[in-house]
Image (cartoon, rainbow, N blue to C red; front, side, top):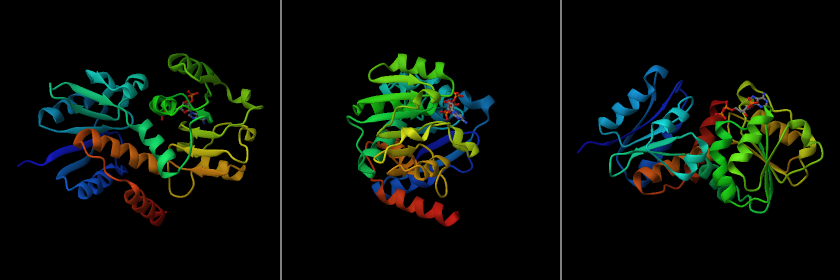
Length: 276
Ligand code: ATR
């Protein structure tokens, strides 16, 4: 019997941890699967997705820069995918229709509320950024019923537009408007860290009980984590747990079984630290 095929498509894709994460899940659940990381040329993205499923492929993860294009290809969108306009998980339903989901938000919330025992419900949240990463997590964040979510972005109009779209307890502001407010949670969804930077956040957003969360991870502290620790946040986390949790959500969508994540997170952390 042929082994079920899965893959992550991105450009570039070299450093993807997804094959190792899904291999660990498969060992745990006893599922026989093959999961590869494939660098897909931007000119051939749609064609490559179509070919993958035509050849019997069972599911795809999609990463930068294809999440919006994956979303546009799909005929069905989960509620989380609908709002985000970006998909990180693709599969075919029983009718053969291409379905898109976005598991980033669920993954982040699981990491925060379960792995890190953090509470979002009734708390004030400052969300940094208004791009794809932030759009991806907003539905799950709002479902957790925070008291408020302030979306702050370098380009204010994008934050305003997003807040208008999602409504609820969200508001939008510019970094310079933040001088007089502090928050229970400060969550970084900007790409500033990719170049080692931190958004221009006034340190007054932090109070002694504030927790900070960066959606990305690295070896050692991310730039935002270092900023948070330096300015007195009570806790500062990176997004390694989110990476593993979003993968577990995808695995559950494809395979109908939810792998446990604690050991996978711990071994990835060890691996990253030993390579540092
Ligand atoms: P992603 O899919 O990773 O979210 P994106 O959609 O390009 O990528 O969004 C990047 C986000 O990071 C945006 O909110 C961007 O702000 P702008 O909308 O003003 O461009 C934000 N960002 C990137 N670099 C930043 C920096 N140095 N300081 C503050 N915000 C930054």
